[in-house]
Length: 498
Image 1 (cartoon, rainbow, N blue to C red):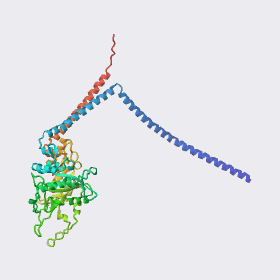
Image 2: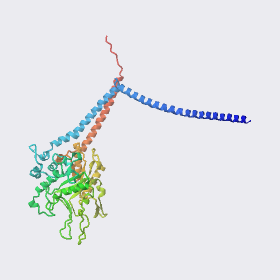
Image 3: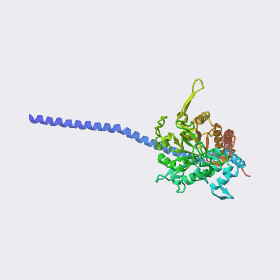
Image 4: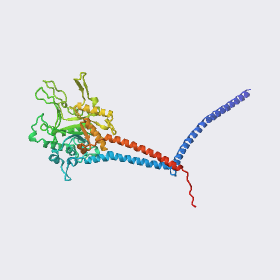
């Protein structure tokens, strides 16, 4: 009995095992069956992508090959190339004539003096610029409100600008590791040991001012006297030396202040300065800005508090008036900042009372801390090749008007320089809108003031002519297409020779 039960149990176990095997085989077959369509679809997708790429490449090859065969398509391609090249050549020729050749010829015909044309030469030979300026040029040059941008690139730095009458020059300075030497150059790779701020600008300027203000006459000057400037024709015209700081501002400007000490000496007073003058105990002059022969302006890496922080001395409190207790900067300083013209309308605000008779202002930048107010023309105003838009002109006027109300000279750098007529149009517009200082690279052209006229008219003519030529080219393409197609569709007649 026990044997029978044990054999039955073994039989049932074997059947269970076989059942499990069948179930597993069924699951495996189901899995394989489910994955086979997916793999098949993937293979079909890859094949279809490859086939589409192959078909596309074959169509391109056939199209290229068809162009090389005689036929309508090749003829049209040849005719289109002729029309496009001809149209481009005509438009380029018109552009060259209108915007390059005509302005250049007008400049060549404009009369100008020999000083601006050949500033530091005698009989074709270079001579010392300082002696030439003192002996000749200073008696005949009329100063104009132009700023010599990157002046150190001139054939004769400082003197090329003076010879054309520019009242502003610019020098990029780099403080060296010794903490004293200031080299002049556009970037570190252009710096040379001999190109120092003293040799290129401070030394010749000091000698010119010494010559213009001889000691026997000027050494007994007072705070109310004004030194004569570099221009003999207008002795009260100040020359602006803008120092564009390229290194750490505090250390660099500290070195600049030290090198200006000889200009600052009480027997000289060659620097435009902010100064509280006390004519008597308890009294102070209302005038705070005292113009002089040279005005030094800092820009570049300079910040609003760079100069202030260098004046660490504190003015003692006056027991009578109670004034004092502040930085010596607010009593005297002789260097100024280049204010940000782009944000000047937001920083300096002006208002008028409802009665229209009174008003007030809130100024962050004013003559006590700044002289220029500058901004990049391209970044602030933008491209004006087709003329100033109403929005651009309104922005320009707002900036210039705010600078004037603030007592600062508005200046735009990064002005267009080519083509000539476009540059002259921008110069003329800035001058008409009352810009304080015109920043230029071409000194001679700026000094002539015989700038080309009618730039907008030329732009309109150029656009109209270009559109007309383009329409003519489209018409030529259409008629050429019809002619070629008609010629291709004509039945050919065989010619037999008898």
